[in-house]
Amino acid sequence: MIAEDDALLREGLTHLLRAEGMDVTAAVDNPDDLLAALEADRPDVAVVDVRMPPTFRDEGLRVAVEARKRWPGLAVLVLSAHVEESYATELLSDGSGGVGYLLKERVGKVADFLDALERVAAGGTAMDPEVVAQLLVRRRADDPLHALTPREREVLGLMAEGHSNTTIGSMLVISDGAVHKHIGNIFAKLGLPTTDAGHRRVLAVLTYLKA
Image (tube, rainbow, N blue to C red; front, side):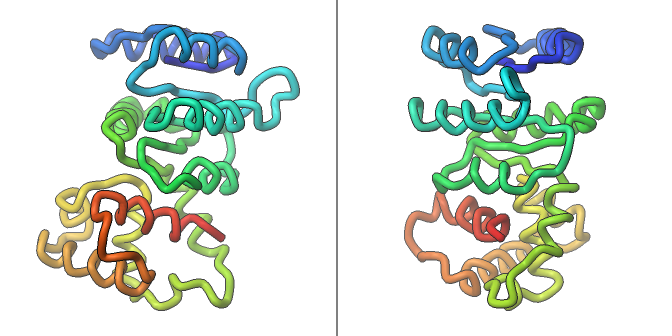
């Protein structure tokens, strides 16, 4: 399902996804129509523009958050023209997966966009590298991330983008075992619980994104 007020981008996304064999159940241009469409047909994932009518400020974000409250587990990939970190943290505030935040320019890189969409639909996260890069330099003095080594911060950054352990190992040219060890250290240093293993990765990403 697509919610995008720009008719050209909305139609382009619809064509792209259908060409990839996906079923676009609805393509709307405002928050109210998105909620109505979600009520009528629960999609695997919703692609939502941050700025939508009537004020073109944060309506898309607010409807995405509202939709995830109404339908827990709904996967949402938000698109934005600019890096606005509060949007990323708000999306992750419920501590569950199935969320993504990409810059619109990433849509032009079809393989990257489709990879992010599939990760989000599968319950993972997909944060734009530009968002992650900006969040790295905006930390409090008492931020728990200061306890991480440079390599652990690299691993956590790639986790925040939504990459798997195997992909992280390939990108950093380290073994799967090394990636697993780094992630274990990250969990320990961030004080994440030893239970609820399925959510620990998302909790680590949330800790990373919070300012």
